[in-house]
Image (cartoon, rainbow, N blue to C red):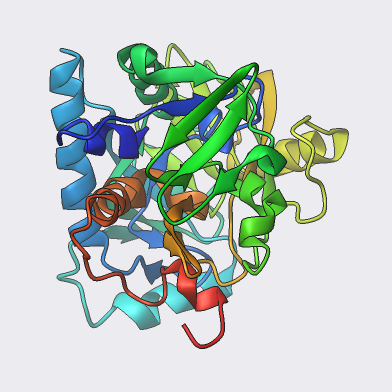
Amino acid sequence: MSLAYSLSTSDSSFLIIHSPNKPSASSIASGLINPIAGKRLETVADFDELYKISSAFYSQIAQLHRKENYYECKEILRIFRNEKEKETFHKKYQQDHSSIYVGPSFEQADSLDINGVKTPFGGFITKNAAVFSYQKFLQDAHDNFKANMVEALVDYSTIQHNPESCTIHIHEYTISCKHLVFCDGWHSSYNSLFSNIAFEPAKGEICLIKAPDLQQDYVISNSFAIIPKGNQLFSCSATFAWNDYSDSPTEIGKTELISRIDELLSCNWHMIDHKAGIRPTMFDRKAIIGFHPEFNNIAVFGGLGTKGALWAPKLADLTKSLLLGEKPYIPHDISVSRWWLNT
């Protein structure tokens, strides 16, 4: 949908082939935009640039639909899970207190208004973070591009291509186009055109809880996030599983969610909903964009993993430039060609 919005600013005609029954991680994603991520508390590479591009991109689309921005700025109450994480933080940031992402650190719960949250090892405030509403964005995009959309499940075996054009068979129709772009997440791993690519899909389970006594506006995180949604509701995510490609929530995932929530909260709560999705992660944790090294009219745009909302606008504009023949520079570490030797 980001690519569709990017293409809509040019004179290009395009068609979106989308199956509403095809599982999508984006449709359930919690949308946390976090500048400091992971157990090692590393600053996300190029975060400033990506945040600036993505927030402007989504703001422009929100104005198009006369709606509030899809980005909501939030501070993160990052809770240390153990002494090792605490030491890592102080070693990393004690000499860089000017970091625009690092707010006050604390040793115990009474130093901030964080009743209902367990902080046995303390924590710190992450600034300049945000929550992106995937669901609102996707619904608005779907409504906006209805005239450009065909609802169908693509059978990869029906795709035909030559140097001049590509064709796809949908129902009883044959659709011809100049370029074909696969934006189908981890499903591209089943596409023989991209069999060289080392996808490593990761199943994630997420839940919605109600916690009447958790009265605060922080995102609470210890690499597992509890995100306020209003009306005493909180989105909690996410688990990781590497060998289950079903989109059904599991009892194992539910048990892990309950354990992670109880690790963070000291107040009463109960689960309202529980869902699952498959993240399109790559073996090297990098996105993939660009034309197939052997076919200059077939492209892929995906592999964004847990950073879809942050990366999608920039990569959508790069992909649009490729399709328009503008030959933009694509760094090798996100180019699809990295999975082909000698390219």
